[in-house]
Picture 1 (cartoon, protein in one colour):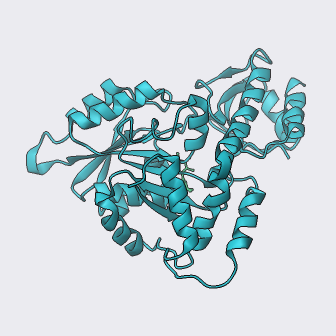
Picture 2 (picture 1 turned 135 degrees about the horizontal axis):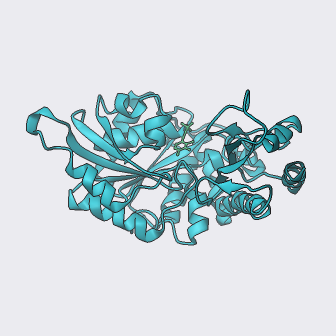
Amino acid sequence: MMFFASDNGGPVHPSVIEALTEANEGYTGGYGADDVTARAVAAVREVFEAPEAAVYFVATGTAANALALATYAQPFHTVFCTDTAHIHEDECNAPEFYTGGAKLTLVPTTDGRMTAEDLRRVIAGEETRGVHGPQRGPVSITQITERGTIYALDDLRGLCAVAKEYDLPVHLDGARFANALVELGCSSAEMTWKAGVDVVSFGGTKNGLMGAEAVVFFDPEKAWEFELRRKRGGHLFSKQRYLAAQFLPYLEGGRWLDLARAANASRQRLQDAMEGMNDITFAYAPSGNMMFPTMRVADHRRLFDAGAYYYMWDGDLDGAAEDDRLTARLVCDWSMSDAALDKFLTVLRG
Ligand SMILES: *Cc1c(COP(=O)(O)O)cnc(C)c1O
């Protein structure tokens, strides 16, 4: 199966299914008052070298982002994010809903990454109309970005520094946190609180979990408010051990990093082979587990006819001329087989 549509289409890692079966014994307290949740919280704190961090589990990245932002944004605030941010394009206004009406102010990008200068300019442009306009609220950064590009640690520090100039909290959308981390080769602490991040949506689902994300507050001051918002928003799971249990095998022995390395290696392998093949170019600098190759329509047609599955990014194949060039979005998850990658490349070669 040549499946490159998203990293949520693949299987759950078998160790996670085993952990769920193991957790499925006997009776525990509900709503997080159980030993599995306590162990998972401890494991997340250890990963972030943050013994004081407040750690919560939710089932979707949208809930993680929207609830985290709501905890830092008043209804009269605006959240600063890029024009390609998931919270802007793909969450059906959940951030606006959960914050009670805060708006988003977009920072323009060409490849999903904002620059510190653009962020500063856009922040400076808000809160200029006194009581009449939106007040400045949190900055939200996605790593790796929705275009598969990555912020170097210095870039991240620079963005956080701009937020701090204005005394604004920083949220990191880490739906693909692990893919970024292994690419940068830094620690989770360096990519978050040491750079100036206050709260992170620590993704798991796209990297082998069944449906669990952690929200990590490095300053527990906001913990209780988050708990209230999570309950009110319908995301406090009564059988919470089944969310938490997924994180135990995931974080154990660095398995989550191995899974991300496998996904990134699959992307790298495709990229290496595609560079110089059939005049293929890349719309954005590939990194992590995602890339956007621009290919001839004939190449796309051959791949789809052979059963490849991925999203067209900038146009429809229907009605396109054979020698037109269109961009695809290819995403690799941890489970990609060599056979699938080889088949894809063989078909593409023609
Ligand atoms: C997938 C994704 C999310 C989370 O999406 P859900 O479908 O709500 O789990 C958040 N941010 C980014 C950048 C994503 O790619």
